[in-house]
Length: 160
Image (cartoon, rainbow, N blue to C red; front, side, top):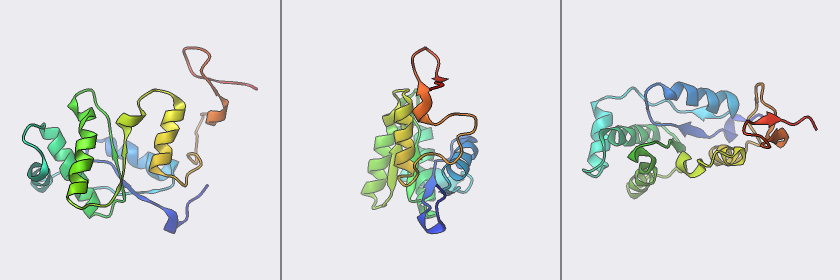
């Protein structure tokens, strides 16, 4: 399903190392949506995050929050938050509530809500990012989810 220009959502992911390149590729090539690339992190990014963050949170959270603010200022309509092994996994809800209290209007997809490891949950995350996408446009070498089988410890494609 190819989205028209008017149907494309503007999606952003906070600046975390070079993950933006992979997320951008998935959003643009896989889902056919528009990716909003924030400017490189600067002192302004950190200052935006520090201004709104509780004192107890870590520095990465403050930079991520600042990056989200810059993405919203650049026109993002959907923000994606990752999960993490540290407290970052819990900070998704905090970041969302801080931004909403500041009056920002956006859709929010927190991957921490989709961490069961089941393919159907990953597809729910894709639907949350892009409700008009029936499925990613290019599955690559993967078969569509209707042919996935979990009868063994490894995922395989059924031949029926």
